[in-house]
Every structure is written in C-alpha cells, then in structure tokens.
Amino acid sequence: MVRVATKDDVKRMVAVHQESFPGFFLSALGAPFLSQYYRGILAAPEGIAYVYLNQAGEPAGFVAGTANPRGFYRRLLRRSWHKFALAALVPVLKRPRIAGRVARALVHPSGNPVGDHVAGLYSIGVLPELQGTGAGKKLVGAFLDEAARRGCRRVFLTTDRDGNDPVNAFYAGLGFQVERHFETPEGRRMNEYWITLGGET
Image (tube, rainbow, N blue to C red; front, side, top):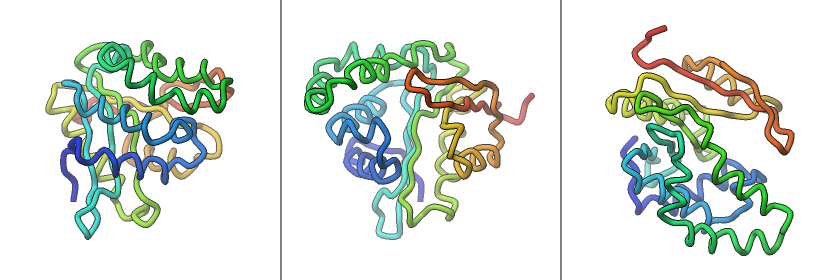
C-alpha cells in the first residue's frame, strides 16, 4: 500500500495536500507552487517521499522530506528559482502582503539542523476517508526506515502547537518528542518534534 513517490504522483500529492490542509498558507499559494515544491523534493538526491495507495491503486496519502535538511530550500531555489517565481506570481499579485511570507517560506529551513545524520519530515497528508486507518503511521514508518537506510540517526518535524491536538497526539504516539517550542513571525506557536532512529537515547 506504500511505495516510493515518483514525478507522476505529484498531481495527486498536491490534491491530497490541498484537501488535507485547507486554509493553510502553502495551500493558498495554489497547485502550481505546490507542484514545483514536491517536484523539487522528488528530484533532489536528498529527497525522501512516499505515497499511500487506496484500494483503487491511487495515491491517497503522502509523506515528503529530505536528508541533510540545512539549506535544502536554498539549493532548491538555486536550481528552479524562475519556476517558483512564476508559480508565486499570481498569488502574490492577488495578495501583495504575502510577498514577504513567500520569501520566508522558501528560505526558512536555512536554520535547520545540518548534517547527513539528520532528516527533516516536511509534509504528510492523508485524505479524510483514510484518516484513522493507519495510513499515516505507515507513511511515517516508511520515511523513518529510508532515513535510517541513508545513515540518518535523527528525524525532526514541526507542527502547530495550538488547536492541533490530534496531530500532536499522532506524533507523540509514534515516539516523537517535543524538544523545542517557537513562534513564527505570523504568531503561530509551533512544536518541534524529534525522534531518534534505532531506539537509541
């Protein structure tokens, strides 16, 4: 039910993202921007991405991130800055105030932990009808296994601290632990979770 994501899955990954995160900033940037984002992860040597297939064999969930996350977005922009600029143009023209936030979204992970021993899980989404079925757990498990195979010893992710109890409980149930709280420039209070691979402390 879980397999490595390919470029042919990007359209479905974007659709699942938008349905899983309605009203969120990246969803509001639209399908062209998200398509470039996920294509960038899939094309990167450090990229890690899987899809969960429903009974019809169609991607109905996904997980995406990278090994060695420090500077990944900078490297991504260096390769495809013109494509991201074009994809962001319409949303920014419609809402000029978001221009600064778009820029921050692209360079934010420059402060991520550095090193081949670390992986960052950036995004996971599952269609509503599959939530509670174990699909998300299988996706995270596949991501962690691949990160470990690549020599990573720890994996981190961030998620909203407030109004997000089911998601926080999901990560805690998988063994992730909150190691840092922080607040975004927009005022979102966030949890930074970490897990050590191989059961080490």
